[in-house]
Image (cartoon, rainbow, N blue to C red; front, side, top):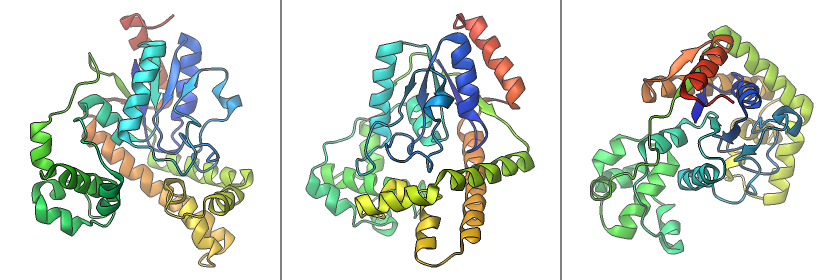
Length: 294
């Protein structure tokens, strides 16, 4: 088992398919958007043709109005591990999920619909009043973690910091997970982002966003808050021209790539980071040494 990470548009999926095809592995998508049906262009998920017959897990599992989070990803990982064992490549840009997989998760208390509804009203200031230590670790704009912290407090009466002290993470992996990162020069990555953005418009990203908004009538869906969707919704509002929205998406995607690179550097210090061609050889050599190459 191994993981391939890297910023958005760096070519992770293509590299993973090449390697999986060669060594007979399956692929587990580490992507919080690819899990959704009907979100094909926004998520940049590999098409059936691009998957080249390699078994893929974590793609097209849910409808866009169904929730997906780290606990569901861990359940998916356990399912995949039960089906294919260790012969799997974990690939994608959702580093938070990978971090949870490596560090393990604390058992989460049962959350009633009433508590979930009440937690939605909380903001960072409210959370910092009951647990300043926990609040200092998250961004004031991180709605997901603010809500989770509120849910813990409302369900147990314990500030999240105290709850996690009483309920330490449960280990999920029996041995260290090798992590390989695609490293690209900034200008090369930016060019790839621009090309992918143009391709998304050619494939019909505007129609995809319009369909999702029409069908689900909820702009708060994770898929409609993603980069690409939110700019197009602003375009529908008349805030941008067609050319401006394309540029806005490319710029915001480049900013996301920078954040992902920083996250990977700080959270996965033992990763092997190389250009694509060298990385492929390093992965194959690693599999050969570990006996994972067929």
